[in-house]
Image (cartoon, rainbow, N blue to C red):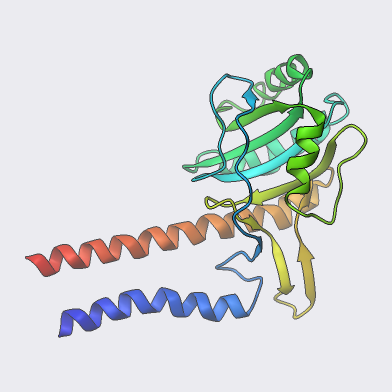
Length: 224
């Protein structure tokens, strides 16, 4: 009976914490969901030839557009403020969708980035026709739009279940806020808001992992 009570407490406590903070909207433990179960990436060609998927990955999703040169600064900002900070975490990746025909420019861009960042393995670029990019972007039903080059300076946070995450509801100051994307032209936006939000999402998964480990440890103890 005592063991069962302990198990109930172990299972109920994280759920209780979740419910408390979920009602408080944006918080320090859980990142709100903007939309759920979004489309997986089609089988588009990647720069390294390996398949790129969002499922079971914590992804930063971006769209460069045709003018790679013009967006170099945005990619560098993302690399310095977000990628370098979280590349060491398992299952983290940055996925950038670019129009076909820009492969050479993207390869050159990555070579430049490698001069600042040693581990480039979590940078993933895929290429598609402009109409395919537009269709995939539209599936997220965002407030922002792609420009005439089929790109945007805004990037999204996508969790392992392909849920789009961001800020929604009241913040800690009690003010309403809604943030579905993060502006890579703004170092402050990346360094402050996006960095905090990625950290919250990673912490969320660590909490779930810890909860599952507690359940396994309890069952092992119970069998002895």
